[in-house]
Each structure stands twice: as C-alpha cells, then as structure tokens.
Length: 363
Image (cartoon, rainbow, N blue to C red):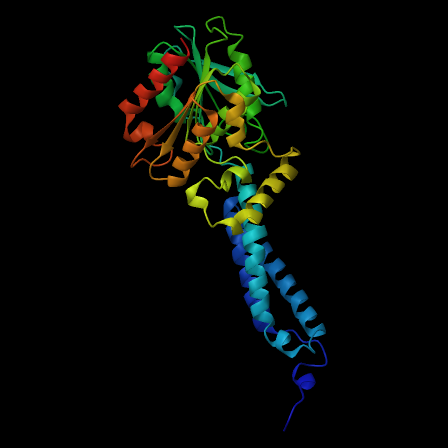
C-alpha cells in the first residue's frame, strides 16, 4: 500500500522519543560539565536534562510545522545535534568558563605564621570597593617592600617561598589573599577587579614607617601576575614587577596575530569575545585594555616576565609583552618547567633571579 509523504510525516503532532532522549542526555552532559565548574554537578545535570528535553520538544514541534519539507523533517535530529554543538562551543562553554572563574575554591590558610617568619604580622586593609583583604606582613630591613600574590584557587601560603627569600635578603614582604580567596572578603572573583586589591596593598605599604614609598615592588603568580600588571597600570607606585605565568587579558591578547600558537584559530573569536562580554555583565565594567597595551603604559618601569617552557603559548605571550614594553622589560623562559613551577624545579636559580631583579631596580 502506498503512502504519501504527507501521511508518512503525520498530520497530527507526535513526539519522537528518540530525539527527545538524546537531547535530554546531551543537555544533561552539558549541564554536568557546567556543574563541575561550579562544584554542583548533579543539580545542574538535572537542570540541563530538563532544558535539553524542553529544547527537544520545541524543536520537534517546529520540525512538524515545517513537515512539508520532507528532507528537513527526516534529518531533524542531525540538524538539532549540529545546532547544539555550535551552541555549546560558542555559548555554553564560554559562559561556563566565565562562571567558573567567578567562584574560585576557597582554601583556608593553615600554615602557622611562625613557619614563615618570627617577625610576621597579621594585617588587613580595605579596597576602594569596600572589601577587607587579609594578609601577612614581614617588616622591611632595607626600606624596600614587595607585594607577593598567589594564583587562582590559592592563598597567601602559596608565595611563602618568595616571601622567605625576599625577607632573608632584607625586603619587607606583604603577602595577602586576593579577593574571594583564603580569608579575604568578596562575593565573586574577577581578574578585572583585582587591580583594586593591588592599589589597596600599595596604599597600605605607604603607611608603614619601615617602607620608603618609592621602593615598592611586586611579584605575582598567574592570576596574581594579572592583578599586579593591572594594579601597576593604575598605580605608579609599583616601581618594579615580576610577572610569573601571566596569561592573556582579553580577546585581543588571546588571539594576537603575532602569537604563533593561535594561528588559524580564528573560529574561536566568537567564543572568547562572548567570554569578555559575560564578564562585563557580571562585573558591570567594560573590558579593560589588553595586556599588550597595558605594558606600554607601565613602561619604562622594569618588568620581568617569567614563562613556562612546557607552555609554548605562555612563552610567546611573555615575549610579546616584553617586546611591547620595550627596553625596560625582560622575558625569562624556563625550559621543562610547568606553569608557575620554577620556584619548585629550580629554586636556587629562581630565587637568585628574583633577588637580582629587585636589587637592581629598587635600590
């Protein structure tokens, strides 16, 4: 018995269970991946499955409305999957990545202060947006002081290596928890806001009788390096800085045409652009200038960019920043070293490089 396409494609709306189940699973997996980023995978998996199911029902209904286009109707599952792959790559994943950076894991500071220095002081200071930051301070013996900042998901104990080496050399050291980290205040974390943390730290050091205001330097690891660079652009009182593991600041840094590792990755532009727009919505601030431009503003103040040889993209960024900053900047690459691990794999060389840099520029 022959059937017309109209009969085969149903005159009344019917749900096809196959696409719905697949779409619910797909939505759940996407939701679960997002949930891992915010430490609540089960709840977001369920929410993702429900949303995926709803999208599937909606798409089935639209496909049925357009059922006269026989080929489109029969290939609706393939089209739906292709659509959601694009949606996931260009919308869901960028938003999930952005969200995950706003809510870092808080790790308590468990290191006893006496293991750092017998002169250690508990200190706190307030940022321009009203957050109280907690930290430690080792008084200066030579009139100069260094701000030492940890990376994402860290706390002040992660820069104790730097603090001990600097303090043993006579420097005052202020190591504190960035906003939304350790014991410091904050409801969200955005690297676009951490310049305020650095400016507040500089203002605190300028109140210390043991510190000469014109002899303040800084060293930061990863997200801490981001904060130092942004803070130095906002405060001329950061006279010299070491930036270990500094990444990209905005889409213009991520996809800089002079960075060989991103050649041919033009298709990522929408995703990274959306990441910046999402941060603008979360923070209420416009995207800051890219790092490759900020370093020009900071120059001719001395900058040392330390990069990991096991991360070629990081090395290329460091070299790019150093070139843009000019003669006052240096890029130091550590072959066979992981991200911000130079202090672990080459402690003596790393410490000596750090001390030589500050001795030269904070006399």
